[in-house]
Length: 504
Length: 99
Image 1 (cartoon, rainbow over the protein chains, first blue to last red):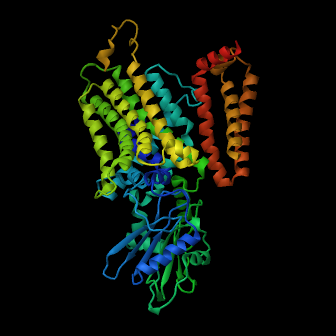
Image 2: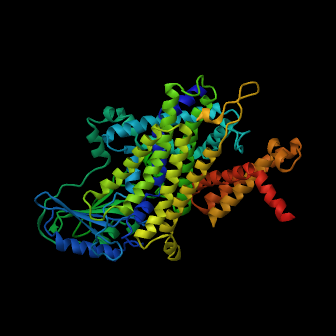
Image 3: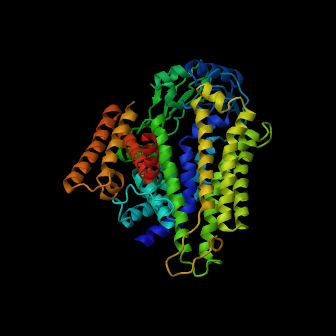
């Protein structure tokens, strides 16, 4: 069973580390997006501003085939995005401030949304492959967790045990503590993650019950009814339509109009589904009269169970305190995976037949550990720095922010290949700490929303973000210090003492 | 407010559970307690954990409260582990304040 835990954990370990790192960040993706869009003031849309925006849309795109109004949620971070499909087939998009309903020009960025998509769709590979890799890794994660529980014979006796400066024992304690103390979270997030990507891993129920996968999706998520349009008609304002559909502003994420401005136009209202078990589906109304044409279908217990599990995974229902608990548990999971990966090398380093030139597998794991654990963390810091430093008018700015993340990560990787392992850890952790500490500094130098002004204005999102950056820098610096001063004790009595340099 | 209550009750529960273990008794109170005392500590520790669950689901809804309870379990246990690992450093500070 220990063998199973080791290999189910090690082989997908680096991918799982990325999933947990980016996944933990995703719990605050709206707040991250808010920080990455400093042109957006804090504040949220109102019925009045929404109606004004719809009015403006009817002025600039009266003949469009479709209108699409995408609303930010209460946690902020996004503008109101309006797009429409002209008759020629082109799509145009405009951005509006949710509070003032004025048209805005803001920096092009993917914000926290990129971090969220990365944790299950990765980057630069076909999305379905990425989802498959992540699903298989999640399956291995579940096996690793369950086998870990079975292997951990002293799970109750060692519940409160965390001993420092004892080499391998300390790493094992750290791995055990971060695993056991948040065990309900780890089990829940892994299992619900698998259920969220259920049909990626197990498409066969769809094949058995429907002629094609699209037939299933049409049945489960029915689309707009077809309607003939003729002549012109005035449409109800979005706030009135939402009231007819019995949704408050906070519950709606998208409003679409089909054939706006014509009699027979259909309005589509998509709910956020942020309460546990809520539907995320559309209500269709007649845009002129407000009569409901089609409600979301009633779903059976299986579908509802899956929805509840997806809601638990996403944690969108969580308010501030619970959201921090989710985030801290996610960070705990990330540390659990990292300590597990390092533990593998620590355990085997003591037993190396040739400490100066370890066998290939050992070197591979050691290098991947440094490159992935520190490299990806550094990449995220550079992503935030790029958001502040890249020219506001450059082409493909959002892509270049993302590219900066991977360039930094790749740079760390290449650097570590040329260094002895211990020095590589210390140098890359120091670089990581420096870059995280730079984020609030660059923020203060490039915007008016630095840490002190944000604290004074009680802008907790901005203050919290800068605070987390500083805390991350402190943790990385502390870890670098601990690694730098660590001196391994003698292996055991009777064996010749191995000088510290030999073990790096 | 409800979150603070849940956290504090859980913290008390975990402290009792820590003290119910012989190894940690030796470190913190420098003597070993009897079997019956250990039992009592363990029972009351778990009772506080259950009580915190009751507080959570009555103050928040069933679903939300249950999730919040699990989350605070982690934080409360984590705080006890941190204090336990840094016992010597903590005791030195306490002694310095006393003198």
